[in-house]
Length: 577
Ligand SMILES: Cc1cc2nc3c(=O)[nH]c(=O)nc-3n(C[C@H](O)[C@H](O)[C@H](O)COP(=O)(O)OP(=O)(O)OC[C@H]3O[C@@H](n4cnc5c(N)ncnc54)[C@H](O)[C@@H]3O)c2cc1C
Ligand SMILES: Nc1ncnc2c1ncn2[C@@H]1O[C@H](COP(=O)(O)OP(=O)(O)OP(=O)(O)O)[C@@H](O)[C@H]1O
Image (cartoon, rainbow, N blue to C red; front, side, top):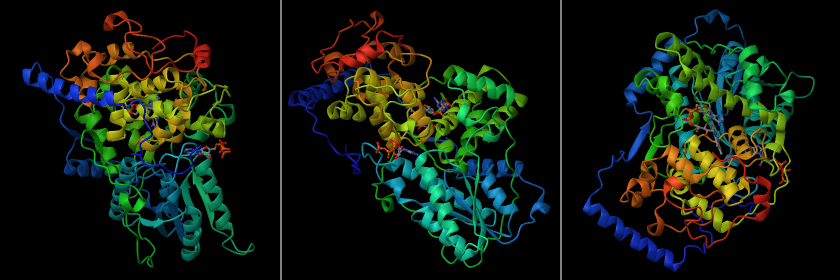
């Protein structure tokens, strides 16, 4: 197994990119040009890059200020603490509803906010050695840090940025500033939990045993429902999502957002150098520019701007349930996930905004459904506590023994978007170009990788870990174990039939034509089954084309063979989606 990081652009030997294939590409280009000039080409062409949120910087700033004012905390008298407290920022890059920041402020006279640029986050993924953080997510996090620094400065603080391991930086700062407490948000997966343990250990090593040492206080704040308010311990978390949801909905309440005073200062006097927000290149990555599709803007101001844009300005919350399975453009779903994953947006804030919308505008299935989806997110977070490292292992929580393939040629075709299936290829190209893929797309490419190609689901999950702006270990590995049939899923076979999905979710072929422009020249009904003018399918489908798409079950040349037989046996002829 490869453990060294490999570049995103590394080329595997790809036998399928044969000479004949290149000839086909040239034919394809000429063919496209011809069709273009004949111009049956009247399709709506989306703008090249769409910023998310789609509001101006001024509007974003205004919305951000107004929101902060609404959430201002009046109880200034509460600050009774002494000395210095440190806030160690991790995946909670926000000011609003940040309990670690609030508790540091209340318990001290001086707050020191710190972020550690941990080199391990820019190393390699666990099994397959892909870059742990791709350039687009790195850029997003950089924007989050810039915005956090700005919002802290506005409140009389600043953000100290240091490069290195938190277990070295935090204890040494605690010692230098004689901090009584370090406040941070609790994480749940083993990599992050190990860092917490090391920070605690090294803080205790700061002083002789007789003298009070700096404490690490870990605060819960990543979910909509607080862990302490669950009607069960995480160890006895229901295995089935619906049971979890019904139980928390009936027995738990979402806590109010934490309010913060307008001024949080002063910061410690003796910080001479606050450090700087790094450039992508300082993290050992090459700058990547989004030149097509959605460009997500990192930071809390942009997150609040997106909530404003989606809920209040475009008034889309009321139709979310009908549009959420779309694939093209910023507005079929909320797009909150990148900000949720970096913690620049609080799920409790979204909850309060949904409630406000329901009061001021309307309440319907769609307004509820955003909360329903956020409960999925909570579920995977709590499940990660129950499962521990089982979440990352091939057999998953069910400990299923499947003889997965790790065929590099097939995997390369999948990740590059060169499988010969436009729906797969378009989704994978979107992921590489923007760091985002719709939920529908993620389910389809996951099913294709594990069920049609028979490839080890962890390769897919690690590739998502590299690329996704919203990468979150719990939601990512949780969803992948579901998709691979090794998770806690009461549905046996989550096979997604590509022709059926294409018909239901991209009937006009607009999505595939956007990401694979060579297909735009084709009549709409041919865009998902382009035949000779597109790449040959790399593998046969387990469940073939339906009659409606006009192709027979084996309507492609499957010269590259089928996935391994044992997979066919395991999944049988289950339900298709
Ligand atoms: C294979 C696979 C991998 C995934 N990896 C991630 C990941 O690393 N990080 C991540 O945040 N989501 C992940 N998801 C879940 C989901 O696809 C994204 O949360 C969603 O597409 C984000 O877009 P949105 O914010 O517009 O979602 P919306 O449809 O607007 O939903 C609102 C919010 O609900 C939550 N949510 C929705 N669906 C899910 C779900 N299935 N699981 C958990 N939370 C959900 C998200 O926080 C999302 O922002 C994955 C799904 C699959 C099938
Ligand atoms: N936040 C995270 N993101 C991605 N992967 C994680 C995260 N937290 C833990 N993991 C992965 O889970 C692994 C632990 O799983 P496992 O029990 O297989 O570890 P291991 O014993 O080191 O594995 P192996 O012996 O197979 O190398 C971690 O080493 C890590 O790569």
